Length: 511
Picture 1 (tube, rainbow, N blue to C red):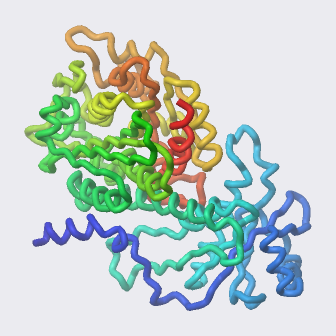
Picture 2 (cartoon, rainbow, N blue to C red; picture 1 turned 60 degrees about the vertical axis):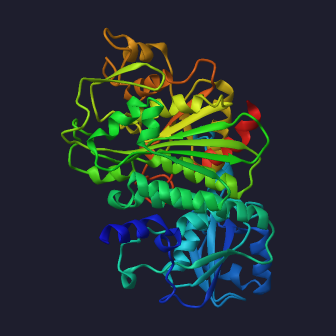
Picture 3 (cartoon, rainbow, N blue to C red; picture 1 turned 90 degrees about the horizontal axis):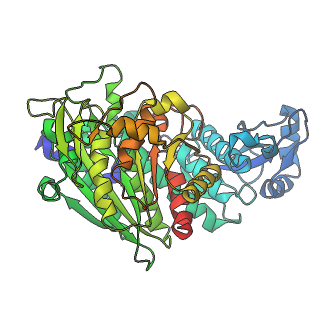
């Protein structure tokens, strides 16, 4: 019975896991307005919506701002009893022209996300129960993203009386851009679902529970969900994938997802690493921070949340998702360092380090995805600690075999604020993985350094030549990131899911 209760709680009930408590929130409404500022100047410039609201207060709002001084980018000031709303949060939008082009980001859009998030958090801290957000001068989608991502807190396992109440957030009735706002809410809520999946403890998010959770959510959105078991994987000769699950008592699962938003015969293939807990296997990880490995299925979380958002947006794309799910655990049946296994395409792999398991599950998933003759394949994974060493916690590394697709995802990252950076696919790295006697590949590179690059080179061996392919390493942005205030500096992020939605929507037409 205890097992059943755990399964029911973790599985479904997205509404239960993300429930909002209103008991200690006031019934007061708060309004979020945007204001621009220029460095070194004291002048105040409202957004058009904020200007109208200021006029409705006979200029008293501007008077109060002038008394306090300029509201800088990302800052928020709350004014009370000024006009229709009991609380008015004025959020600083800064000056987008001050963004350095080397930052490779749309500064105006990012400023809106940051400002909306800051205002929502400020009003929430003051127990405002309902928050109304303006359109931020044609940036309603970005306002919705910042507000929705900020209005999230993982507290599913806290006692109800100790949970932090969260307000409702909605779009201003008389603002313009309702459709854009709704799009932003859909995308941000899907990212919040990815955060929830990643944050949930591994005993409450096993491969079976993950599969059941996804089946429930995506089926309701019109996505076809097939949950394959280990017998199916054995029949498909997925020896590389199955070698990882050898040490775990939890059965592996393989998700095959199909969203048909267009009549295009060829699909876009998304492949996500789904290690629901990674101990390292026999090559055991250090104990410090091993709990973070509950989120080693961040690639899987990104794939399923991206497909959810595309389905809810009714995006005109044909997408298939492939998600290998298993645990990587040590036991008497676990794969041993030095063992040789065979992937679905017949290539032999020497597993010298069982903690380099992500590439093993992705290898077979890439082979299976390739059998559908997709337009292109994108795989995404919390694959290597080396990518965080290389790039820090503000950007995902992308290895792209196709320049056009790289340009599309690079631009998508600029627009969404979740940036990507191109990494090399040199022959040098492939030689380190493939130049061996006795077997085709080793799951470790021969040389020192370049761990992200050799991992990508390994994966490349399982994508047919001529199939455009991108590998996205998201280990650096998995959690505790310092660059996005709207997702917070602590906890799992669900990144770069918004970039994937933008990329898939545009790239399906580019190839």
